[in-house]
Amino acid sequence: MTVAARVESLERRLHVGQGEHHVTSDRDVVLTTVLGSCVAACLCDPLAGVGGMNHFLLPDGSGAGTDAGRRYGAYAMELLINDLLKSGARRERLEAKLFGGGRMFDSLRDVGQANADFAERFLRDEGIRVVSGSLRGMGGRRLHYWPASGRALQRSVADAAAPRPRPAPVALPAGGELELF
Image (cartoon, rainbow, N blue to C red; front, side):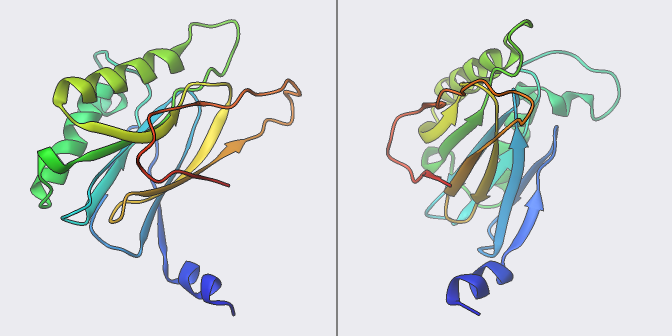
């Protein structure tokens, strides 16, 4: 077994589904998700070694039931930030990476664009620096995020039924680590 294979076998992968979020300082945890028009915000306090990811479906709205609000960006962002602060992160040190917001269907309203616009605006208004990511573009992506370090990897999710070429997602300002595989 190679060193890389041993390291991967020690990792614990946790999937963050739609309307969910997870925060941890465990260096062995990698958070994963699959995004289309949804957005995942990955926030990290590199000094405290704590980070987390959320996954929201729509920028805003009202929902029925106790957990309905988790699907919306404003609520999802507040939950993530509050749990990070409870876990020892400091707001002024938070760094964000944003992913998703893809245009999934040509004929419908561009929900991905609205999600991406919301996430950027929310973090700007909160004074949280966006260091990198990959928003908008066509199609989906698979995301792996190591919250304790802030490292992120993404790859495109190909749709075999859609032979059209998919433009590369628009990258956010450089400064954080973003590896494509």
